[in-house]
Length: 105
Image (cartoon, rainbow, N blue to C red):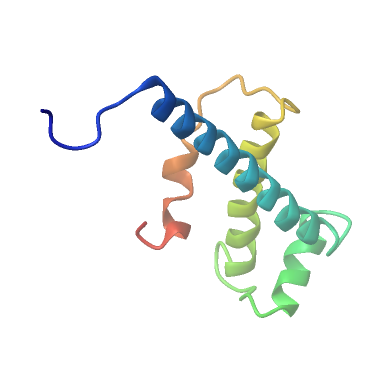
């Protein structure tokens, strides 16, 4: 008898379905965050300034407000790729670009 959980088509289908639901839910969470950011102002400059009023630093290069906006924009780009709203001609490593905001996870 083999030790541990043995893969079956049913088990793999459940795992695949769980991954698909998790990805969709993550993209929906990204939409919610991005919609909040967009509502802060008419363009990136206004949105970054508004983030400053919410407590993000606006000094430095980049400022915390700008860095937050950039990271949220990266996540929104992944969301747009997921929903087929954009295409990406050049490879971009979103995992590497957003590593700093995962807190080591």
